[in-house]
Amino acid sequence: MPVPRPAPQPGVLERLTYIQAPLRAVWATLHDPAAQDALFPELRLGPPAPSWPAAGATRSARLRIGLLGTNVRLESLEARPSARFQIILVGDGIRLQRGWYLEEVAGGTRVAGTAGLTTTGRWTAGFIALGRGSAASIVETHLRILKEMAEGSRPTPEPGRPTAGRR
Image (cartoon, rainbow, N blue to C red; front, side):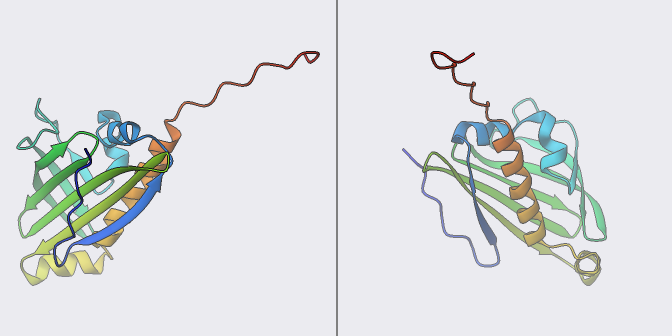
């Protein structure tokens, strides 16, 4: 039974994309340890806890958004396989909540990526703005990379057998 996608909270950005790949392939790509650096270019992730991505699991990372570089702690808020995944990144003066909602449609997968960025203090917000960083650029870049990787992971169809009389 599909998990309904909630409406985004005020201040939370949402972007949709359609990925021509099965839902399980998209979920596997999202959580592939070998793909984490490519999928999350704004993060330098530390080693995951053994239970990652289960809800409540944590890991450390270095976040780079705009001109701001800071150490953050990631916590998995929700992980429903092949349906939803939410994390929160918390650091000194910054909080970034991310979410992915997956839905099987028309032979592929619709992915809704969300991000809510909250900062405290003028310096933090200023460094992000000066470097042209934003929640929108993070979500859009991530969805583009996820789409490329998930669609690239599909097995190529085997060539058809030659018909009679052809070699």
